[in-house]
Length: 448
Length: 183
Image 1 (tube, rainbow over the protein chains, first blue to last red):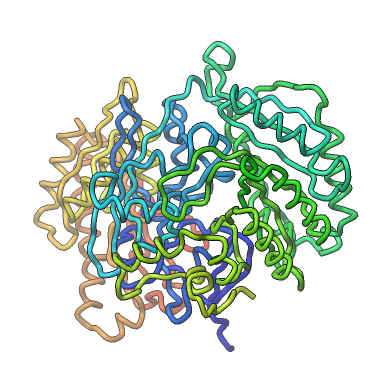
Image 2 (cartoon, rainbow over the protein chains, first blue to last red):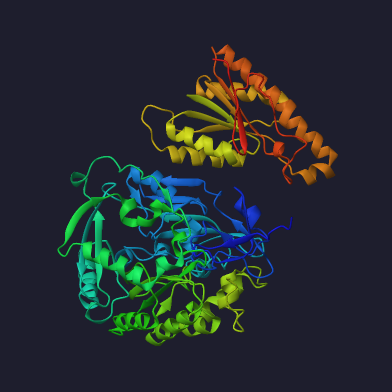
C-alpha cells in the first residue's frame, strides 16, 4: 500500500506536507527544527513548516505551570499551556487574562507569537502588553531570557513575530483580578455602519469589552448593519457565587456541501441573525465562555466551510485618520461578492510594542472567505485597498497574500527582518508563512 | 487519599497526577530526575491551589527503576512524608521503537529488565508496605500498543502483560490499565 505523506494544516484546513513532533520537553524537540506550533489555530500557514524542513515542534504537551503569585496575578508557565486551561485553573481563583482572542484553544506561545487581541483591546491593548518575560530557544541552540529590561529588542520582535525569532519556551504574564466568574452582556442592533461605529465608540468609554457582528452582504443604507455586544464582569452581588458549569462540546458532524455557503443561504442566515437581535439594549448574564468564545462549544466548526477549506481576511483600517475607510472596504467586498456568514468588527486602541504586531488604532474587520477559484484575487483586491488606506493585515489569519502585497502593507517589515537576522543570522528558523511573505521573489502560497 | 506516583512527570502519569491533585489527594512523586520532579511538583501544587483541610504541597523524592536497592527507602520516605499510603501508581517504564530494539540487543535487555523485572520488584516493595498499613491500591499502567504489531511501536516487548497477577484490566484502543487491589 502506498503511504500517504503526512500533512499539516492550520484552522482553515489548507494543508502542506509536514509533521508535528510533540514532547513534554519542548526544547529538545524544537532544537534543530524551524518552527514551534501550538494548537494550530492560526488560519493560514503561520504554524506550518517552510519548504525543505517538514517537521515542526509541537508545544501542546509542554504545559507545566511554573509559578503563580496570587497576590500579584503573575503567572509563569511553559509555552504549550492552553488558554482554556488557564481559565479553568485561575478563573475560580478570581483571575483572567487581560487580553484574550476569540477562542480559548490557543497556547501561551501562540498568543505571544501572534500578539493576539480581543474585545478589550480599546482598553487593555494586546496580549504582549501583559507579558513580562519570555524564555526562548534561538536558532543556534542557545536558550535566552528576554524582557523589557533584558534583550528588549528580541522581546519586542517576538511579540507578534509569528514564532520566527526563536522558539518560545516559557511565558511570564500578569493576569487581572475579576470580581466574579460571570459577564454582564448588553446587546443591541444598529441599522447601518455609521450608527454602529458611533455606538462602538461610545461603548468603549463605559464597557471594557466590546465587539460587533456585521452583515457584509446587504448594500445601500443598511450596509454594515450589525449587532453590538458590550460586556463587563458582574460585580459580586450581581451574579451567582459559583462559576457557570462547563458547557458540553458538540462536534460539527460533516463537511458542509458548497450550496450551504451560497449567497442566498448566507444572506438568509444574516437576515435571521440581525432580525432576531433586540432593537433596544438588552442585558443578560453570561458565562465568560459564552461571551468570549461562542464558537468553542462546536468542535471542528471549521468543517462548516466544506472540504476546500477557508481563510479569514482580517485587516485594521485607520478610520480616525481616514474617515470612511471601513465603508469603502465593505463596499468593495460587496462588489466582489465575498459572502460570509459572520463578519466581526471592532475598534482597536493604542499600538503595542511588538515590531510586527497587528493592532493599531482604528477599526478592524474580520471576514471568513471560503476557498474558491477566485479567492486569491479577492484577497489581492482587498489588500490593495487596505494598503491605500494605510491599514494592516493580521498574519494569524492570512493565507493568500503575496510578498509584494505584504511589502506594500508593512513599512515595518525591514526593521523586523533586520532584528530577526540578528538573532537567527543563519536563517535556521522559518515557516510556510515566512517563505510566502518575507522572500521578495515570493514562492507564493503553498496551500492547496 | 495518600498516593505515591512513580513516573508522573510525563505522559499519562502527568495527566493522572493533575486530576488527583485537583481532586485534593495528597501526592508524593517518585522519579529519576530531581529537576523534572521539582518542576512537576510545582505544577501540581499550583494547579491544585489552596485547598482547605488538605496538604497542598506536592513533594517528591528520587527513585530509579534501574536501582532496585533504593525502592524500599524511596517508598518509606514517601510514606513518612504523606503520613501513610493509600495507593501506589506506576506509570514509569522504558519505551523504544521496534527498529531500535532490533538493532540494539543491550537496549532490548535493558527494556525487558526495567519494564518487567524491576517493575515487579518495585510492586513487591509497594505491596508489602500497603499491606503493612492495612491494605491499599496498587495500580500499574501497561500498554498493548505492541500487541497490535504496528511498527514502529515495540512488538517484541509489550510492557508488562499480565502483571500484577490479580489484574482486572480493561482494554482500550491504545492502553491497558492493570489494577490489582489488595484492599
